Length: 412
Picture 1 (tube, rainbow, N blue to C red):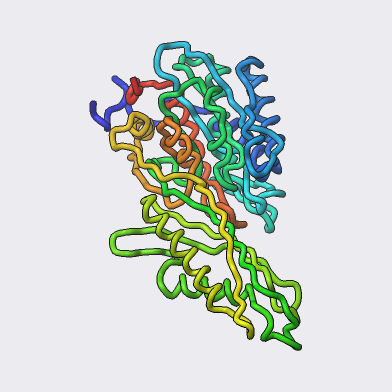
Picture 2 (cartoon, rainbow, N blue to C red):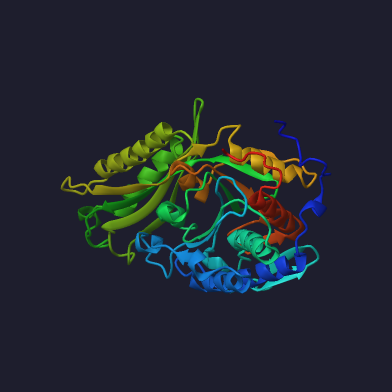
């Protein structure tokens, strides 16, 4: 089949799948205004549930899972799942987005200026990441329920705790999803961008132990944990194992993002806690980055000694946040997404992400997932904005994918 084909006898354009732009705007504006950082998504769940029930969803088609009982942060709720039986044959499709925002978005006051939305509160981000995604798939479900549009079996899933480690997708109860054969995830960026792969990430907790002493009376008796950590980080930077890492044809990144230690300037600090990460599309190279981080800290421990030859020590705890993935060029969900974008008269483009997505865990758990954008820009900052034309296009694309209008990429 041609990847550029559209439904028979149809001309590309927005008229193929008209949406109620006014309602879509009302939904996204209301969702962005709801406080709901990671672990505090109950208000968002209540909002979505209320609208789905009002549109005709049945109580037994809606449920929350127990994902929040397995996450490091014990949150208010699990993932919200809506399962609709098909009104026409076809493999089950899943549409997803995450509900949580980063803390800077708490207090958002969305305001529309022209075709862009920003927060009127100068101290907050907008929260379009990812309330725009949550609104996109909610709008799709509402259109299907209210207009009784024919569709294959569908699952809608609103994930929790994406921003702090993709935990909603990681711990989703797969048995509650209805065995979808493909999935479409809405997150940041352009509506016509298809993210078909993403890096893998490893997170580290590092505890450096030194020896306390009076910094003015007997500094020579102390072993500074701050000095140890500083030497280790400096070595990583000097040797090219921190930041943008390029070794031959291997690529990756690392970052020491949190450093905590010390209570007074007149005490040689005996403990420093750090959090670091390593990322790469190549799992073996990512492990090599981790090894270099550990080596740098161990060597720094033996370098910093007191007058008696005593040195510090270091302990590491780490976990894989998400594994890298890359969908095949002819993966049915990718072809279906491209067809939906082209139906709007636009040309899709594929991208590989250096950040983690819910799609990382879904794909690794056997549900091939392509991610699309909703028009968000500058996420996690007070400059965050939402381009409405992209958001409306995202809603049109999601509706087309949900009802499988032209049958392309059906994953049979």
